[in-house]
Length: 231
Image 1: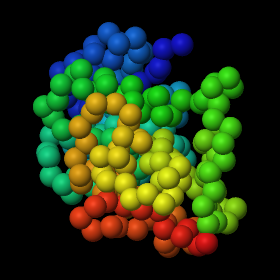
Image 2 (image 1 turned 120 degrees about the vertical axis):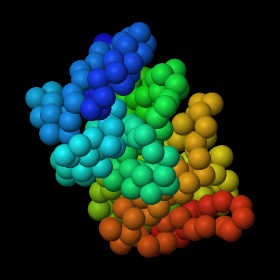
Image 3 (image 1 turned 30 degrees about the vertical axis):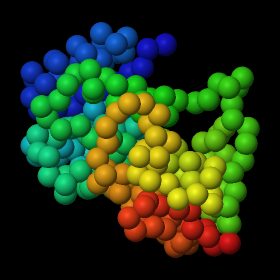
Image 4 (image 1 turned 180 degrees about the vertical axis):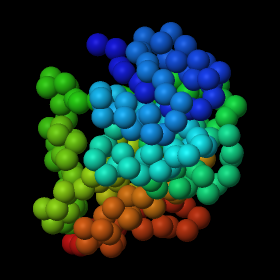
């Protein structure tokens, strides 16, 4: 079945371009012009992914995402007319999965949407990864997309889960930023270093919230490695 994508942007021309590109790629779309309408649309029918403009009037995309994350883990791809790092970091730390700056290539946007959807989709039974990753007191079960620390569940986006799985698969290795994002995206898509850092920061914050304060260590000038995770 085709994926259902919700597009929220106050610019009708941008909405039209995005919907056309996504529908040409075989997806179904619904479009809204403001944040309140986006939240209402999600209540009526949960989409598979939301393309969410940060700079909408009245209720911006960051506030929409903040409210969504109180009750939903639907993947979010942020759009912004500004390429300011504060937007990028705030967007990802709000729980966004990726970030595209206007003006953008419709082909790249579709590619990023497909990458996020592949990460978010349930794993087919015959393809299920039945391995369980454990390090210290941290556990990941890919087949059920479940993560926990000392038995306390973690709510991770698809990208965050993939990044953490990459660390647990090679717990003794130091991973550079390119390797970190290759684990998450597995596609030829450029992601800035600050975007990588923001994902790492978000994972650390979520783990710290359940008591794991030594999850990912920075190896200056090289990259990151898995910490003791309470072990």
